Length: 124
Image 1 (cartoon, rainbow, N blue to C red):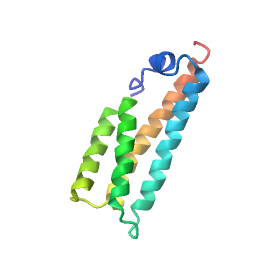
Image 2: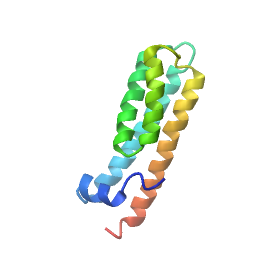
Image 3: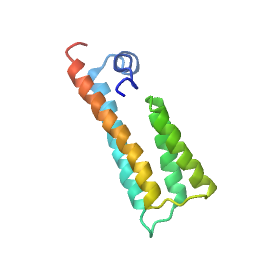
Image 4: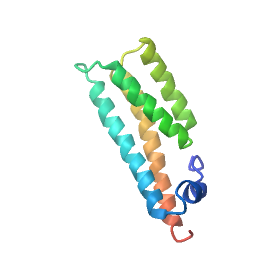
């Protein structure tokens, strides 16, 4: 799964061969993932039934992870997003658990990328 992001391409083209910028970018996205997860957790609680906010957060996250090469996760999340938009499901604990699983999977992969990047620092 660590071939989703071509780390060399990301380093040279996206980050303009700037190791610190690349590290900050991946770290920033990882923190963003965890922030999304925390906010969605609050929305899944029974007293918080703001489906629109959940839809917006999931939509933003789908776009971000799609750009990083996580097409499968983005597709699965967009299906949840569409169900929420159509009102066929509520953003409850069950849906939150499914969304969280995908967000955590992306976060875990980003941790792997950080490890690869740190090992390659001397190569670049």
